[in-house]
Image 1 (cartoon, helix red, strand yellow):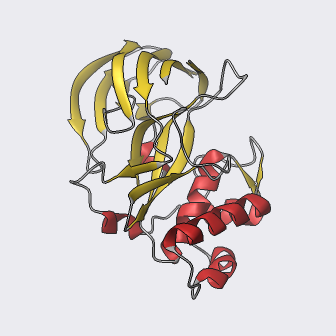
Image 2 (cartoon, rainbow, N blue to C red):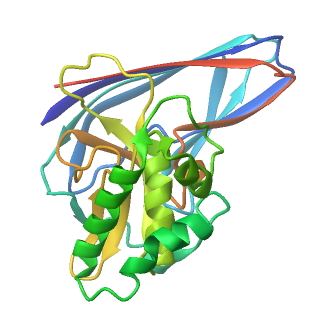
Length: 266
């Protein structure tokens, strides 16, 4: 499938910045499920300094922001070919080892509620893949999708107790559950083409689980499906903070607003 992507992030500050830096994870990489035709990033209010691969082998761009500005606009315009793989990526990043992704982070560490929820799968004799599907299905029954009920800093345990969240929260809860059960799981950020929707207000999030016989396998718990040719991978990591498309430090920015527009079309 040939997908065209337009993604605009507009930051507005209450007063002029004295200093700012940003790290972008907005450049997808070629692999067995996606191949880039063209990809352009335009930055208004900042200067690209260098690119590098982080410890998750994500392609990152480091920016410095211009002094005395009140607005930054980061625009992505790209086209990419995607391939149906039934959610199976295999070993797409040999330099990152699956055992790394068994580690808890503060936002994915399970509390008593998630541990209690997962106990029924501890001694289950089903296959690894079947257990992953069972956990994903039960999370969707228990947690309801609701915008504005959580933030980027809401932990898996908190959103699980609240029984609400967005794709990021579904993914963190799934990661928390499966790491508790002994699986290697990584957070994935990217784009999703949604039928009948021309404009979205955010990027998307899902998870990859390492299955011995298959390698990395994708699970979009929020939508109850495995990623297909409508998905584009930007980055992955231990949790949202390792894979967020844009992350920055802005001095003198007491009040910051962010407007995001994402359009993914075939």
